[in-house]
Amino acid sequence: MLKKIIIYSLFMGVSVFCLADTVDVKSDHPQSYVVQKGDTLWGISEKFLQKPWLWPQVWEANPQIENPHLIYPGDVVSLQYKDGRPILSVARGGRDKSGRYTRLSPSVRSYEKEKAIPTIPIDAIKQFLSRPLVVTDDEMRDWPYVVSSYDEHLVAGAGNKIYVKGLPEDAADKRYAIYRKGKPYINNRKDKDTILGYEALHVADAVIDKPGDPASAIIARSSREVLNGDRLAAESEEDISTNFIPTSPRQDINANIISVIDGVSEIGQYQVVVLDVGTNQGIETGNVLGVYQTGKVVQDYVATSIQESEEDKKRLKMQYEDVSPTDSAVSAVANDIRDTKRAFDKTDFVGYLGRPNSKPVETELPDEYAGVVMVFRTFENISYALVMETVSAIHIDDAVKNL
Image (cartoon, rainbow, N blue to C red; front, side):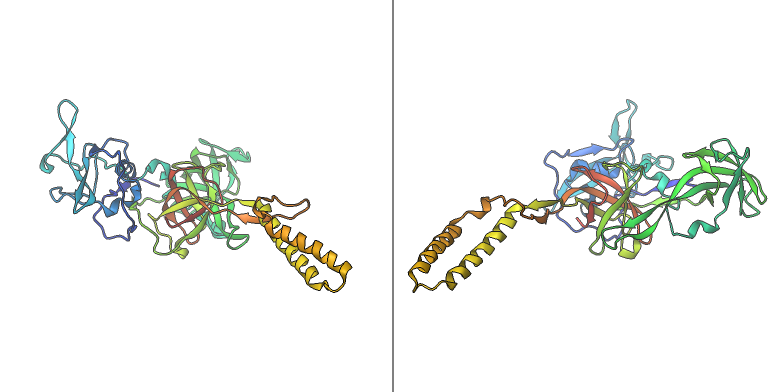
């Protein structure tokens, strides 16, 4: 179970493989900004930088700050310039008696009980951090399973008692998550119909009431009705550190969005998408990637007409060369062919929209930039990413690659 999330600031002075790119500041950026409760570090960077994911290149820790790794409400982030390049720095701050934020000395304020602001909206991804979201075809086969409900109904919900087989003897009073094998994640574009894994669909949470085989359990909460055959996995008790420092992949990534959580048709900001690449392809937590709308395939009749005109020219030329000028009657035909050929040579075929029954040439338009995602959890061949920015609607099958 996710008991606690330790948030490390995006402004950490650690050695990471960061994105190497030109950092441009916004023309309307503030000179400074007082951190508010509910802010995210990505959002704060967005106030100053055109590409907020490039903040590691311009962050400079204030040496007077005892712990510059955490940013709190009341701190003041400022944009300055050093040797002609932009620098973001932070000064510790706090509230005075009037409730206004003021800059304070590091020694007069304790941060032990205060919560640092997160890198990205944690609430949007919290449920995805500790659960086994992706499983193999037979991975769930040996998990404990629901054999029946108390009243032998086929479905059960929150507050109902269920019976579970296959639990360990020391399972009493422990909490378990209930899963169902969901849809397969399929790679349709690179390797046709290749199954990359299966969604582990979270159904409910339960507390073991009485051990045994079968054991009894009470459903604490549920997001879906629990069915016979659903599988159980013990909830994790370890703390999870979310160190989402934006980085660039160490190699070229050519991926696609293959699914979106909740199954919406158009994907917007702060929605979770599934990518068809994972650790086997070099993806790491924190990688920032661009999303590009897959280019549409259009029917090109102009190219068809140009191709046909070239064929007509070749045919007329062959006819002209085969005519003997010694025969007067044939010479007249040759003159007609010559005139027709000259007319073809002068025709503006670019403006010609094709002929009836002509088969058009299919042309794929280039991909168009649509937004930015950050990877927050990885598996062998799949990764989960949060949509951080959008400039247009994002869809399943859109391309995802290096910025």
